[in-house]
Length: 342
Image (cartoon, rainbow, N blue to C red; front, side, top):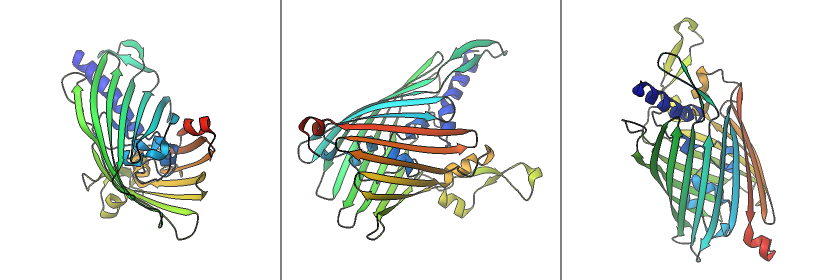
């Protein structure tokens, strides 16, 4: 019975993996859910956005810098069904070339009914995860910056708990004259220190590359991010329209594998204080091929506005025709608020 409950608890852990629409056996795919409305608007993952926004450090620790000095940000996300995620992050400069940040995230997946192996109900419980993070970045020169983010993860599912640690390493190159940003990130390197029961659960280790640049002299920026670079083949199941009697068919062509690694984003930003963004994640869309996806599956959209010391961002996605995700960011630059600078 204990083994059965352990399997059930692990299944609850993988519930977050389903929410993130990842084809992975990792029990920690919630670590890939963005806390930034800006990144989420441009396809949910973006490691190359250059913006004085402390919430972006969960995408790439090298996006943190002295420009976020004394900035505090709150994020909330209602995630596909009954998931409710919230977090708080604070960033501060460390000399002329350094910066650090502290953050905490709490992820609750709603109420789930528990059962014994014979089908007897054992009552409801709420699986949850908590992530505590510390980030440091350093400018090597005027264009190159590196950063590290340490994450401590505590998970509780019914009577089972686990603890894990992960590290993100990132680097960013930014050419202000060309408005060109290039990034590389090693994400979620680490493992469990305390297991749920007998088996270790993997972390969603990944290598990511990012590109973002203005389109000429226009107020538009294009972003392309490559993810899941530790493996080439990313097959998925879908219904074959030509042969519906076959049921689900495994898809794994060269083009599908290529585009399932790529996330595209287009941003309209007439000034540094305002943006509207739209993103497209082909992997998200194809992951939902067997879950009654709709026209909006794979698309994300969002906008952000910053007025003096205050900032607000909102983003939205509808991966499934019966479920959507809404995220809100609120930020305040305390130093500007105190000293009254723009």
